[in-house]
Image (tube, rainbow, N blue to C red):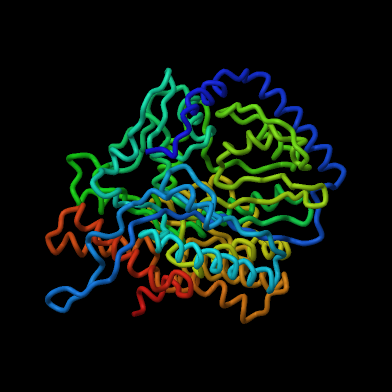
Length: 521
């Protein structure tokens, strides 16, 4: 059951009764405050800074066991989705996310240099290691993955995602974290049902809980000069497709949410490599309000602020001003919380001296290991640093082509038809040429920021391995399901076996290995 507050329905009702015009007027006034601070240089810094948001889901703990015939494999009773007690989240210093099974870590911002990146990786490992010890004592573990596929013991995924009660006209999802804004999202959209639009999937729920299927990593790049936000934003759009193609990790849904007449062959033939994008867009978008989208290019930093202020209001919660610097534009920050573009600018800071403007890069699903995740943080930061310095011509790639690249990667992963412009201005669709140019500039950007050549190569190595071999986590999953099906398993058996193998492999490699270790064994 929800970690319930008996007054949740009443609190949600208060949000729904908020005057939207007044809320939006306050957001517009806040936008003018931010733009005035931008003109004064408040959001400028002397160096680039990086950070990372890292999401997980929890499963029941299992062990690698030996079979009667000497063959070993993951415990078939393990790896079921688990609800994380809120007291446990507090113990491990993680934040709650949409579902009761979710947990999120946010790293401390660090300068983009050798020590800063090392500090990012060390902080993730230290905090995650402690969290694994604590959750392990409770019979569960945190998993780094793009989408869960095995529901809690004795439940179906469809039931877990759809369970809800209605209290005085307010829908309260049973398995949603107890935060007013989450429950308000499900009641302020003006619809009675939320459906997932993906090949052969048949899933509709009364709340936004299907969004809790997915988990991600979100690298942040804080620019030195806020005026450069538009250029970095637009460059991030150009690299989004290629980086997602290397990172795809959500090719399968829980088997019981596929249509009744969908066969394993149907799902393998038509299924996409990155269904996280499909879930997020189809559940949270509605007619006239594309909350989740591949955004258009920006012409100015002021336009970035105005887009947030003018975005369709979803959760018009009143915000009381506090003592933080960014409380001076608290309503705009609240509105930014539902500004779910795949690349989005952020303006905040607890104090005036800590005020910052940054790019939040949202396309990448959670990865098999910490080193894989840090590789994407390093690659994104390196590209944001290196491409502008070299005036890379990919900045002139048509927006329509960048968008097409992104959705091609969603569908086909590393095998997608992608278009690129190399450093010498040559347009190419050659995968090897594209990824070589992309990753070379990521490494060069890291070196520009003070990372040693050997360290830069080491950070990017997990992605270069994927580019060289053509193997991604999604491809690894698809191959294992295909092999199981070929051996006579049905779709549910094949997907669940693959998922348990994924979690078992991660058990030994999460903190210190890479995804390549799973394949090279």
